[in-house]
Figure 1 (cartoon, rainbow, N blue to C red):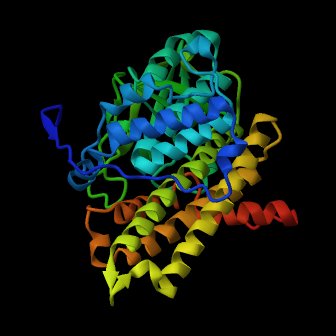
Figure 2 (tube, rainbow, N blue to C red):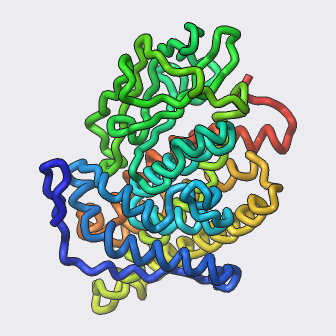
Length: 404
């Protein structure tokens, strides 16, 4: 058992029997360093996540203690430079780590994605060296918890409509507004917030959440990502030092570049959830007997399993190529959108089909399919909805903007 803030998180005695599917020998495309990173995170998930995740999900407990552990294995901002306490990995390695984390649970991967891609990345990319040295080492270790404020109650898919704003007041900015659906906000020490300045330009600013006028009410009643912490960000005349402004970007290009980085990690992560559901369904179908033989011997079961492994394999190849393009600096945001949309959708379909193979047992927490299915409903929506990414691809291939 593990105690956190007076709440006891129960460990189950069930063995994590996950055996990763690799039908096209994707492992043979990976470097030794990439394989080591994958195996390290895979082992960590089996040891730290699998024993507690069903209890955390059922009781809506966020296992905050895992953040320090994620920092210890280098999973927070791994592709950022070592001088800031990060691992300096390539983008394929980063993706593989997100895959293994989401195999454990989408909420665990979300915590790492937000910290690394949406908080640490913009501070590194658009901040000053002083800001990097002040915040990145603590965020990399998990000592500091970060969140990302872009989505607003009335502005989700249209971030340009935001009304959160900053106004100059001597050597400070006065920050007002509200953000919604913010992972980690109720426990965050630091928020990277996007707001409009007095000229209407979108600017990024680092907010220390202990600043008067800053609050982060938690959102309750979620039926998805229940082992993740989600809330609002509310700013009422919060005085933020001008030195906290990210000076090296103006406009929506800043937050959208962060989302591209996060969406890339999601494209890998969703495969992990799909792999877990497929592996569980395959094992169950070989063990469960009906009409005198394992249900894996029936045509309809084999059809489901064959389609699952085909889609997983296609998704694996898609992100491996995308990762190489990312490392070469050639990947486009539209290419990332395609991978995010495709891989999350196939993962959700696989979770549903895997649940069917498990029959009635599939709706219990004895097996992971229903939890992954519920989580993936959120992953399908956040960081750009399924339909928005479809239109991004459509605009990219036609040159015509369907958003207006």
